[in-house]
Length: 314
Image 1 (spheres, one colour):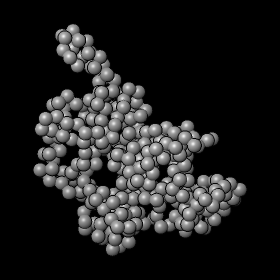
Image 2 (cartoon, helix red, strand yellow; image 1 turned 60 degrees about the horizontal axis):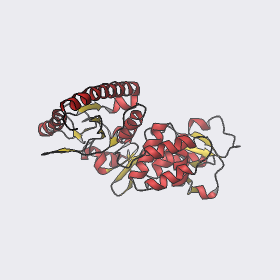
Image 3 (cartoon, helix red, strand yellow; image 1 turned 45 degrees about the vertical axis):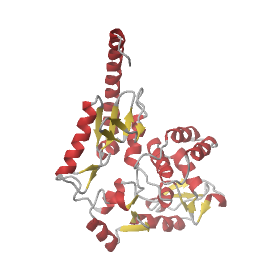
Image 4 (cartoon, one colour; image 1 turned 90 degrees about the vertical axis):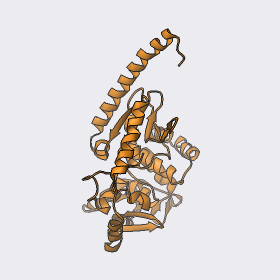
């Protein structure tokens, strides 16, 4: 669910910080959830915002990746290539990801301007100095940490760059190091995740036994309808990636509070996590998800015999 801020939340956020939280590339609508129109206009005017196309923006540093790759006779790859293709990432690389031939010897200072990867890529795997979409997906799915790989896969699906069946087929065809993880990522990927924040939260939830969160699953009742970020319908658990927008109001705060109150009143448990929780303190997220899952599972075990004993239908 999309939320609005109260006083003292993200009203002072600068464009680069907002875009970093959104995964390095974002639409105008996504950007304006975190900064004002004035901030966006100033960023475009002073060069701190990079216009990627109609209604799409990226970090200015994205333009440095091709130059860095050329300087070491390599190609833009991994997260930097994902950003080039318009896919959001969990972590925007400090130095561009660049793939160079396996036998290439880097100079002492090269690693201060690039994050190197080594592979011998055929010409069919490269286009205009950047790994192709297919090669980029293969690299990310098998070579990045699971949560980062899931963020890229979700974004590629969300952008329509590949369909779920195509992603599964791509992963199934991989062999060697990282191919098992690639298939796990493809099986878990969903274009319904709104951003890397939600993707990483879902990746953490997959580590919790007994928890099966579905992204953007509607929850409804007579006169009530919401679409939370993540839902486990069996446990009646809602998990929210709590993004606060720049433009808040008392009315929006009231509406937000009512949504959560209505969920709890109808028997749902609601957990809310901030961006800092998910990105900087994953142990807290995992432990609280695990504790809540165990608690709800125990409650379900208690309820079932009572319902059967009373003759009530489930």
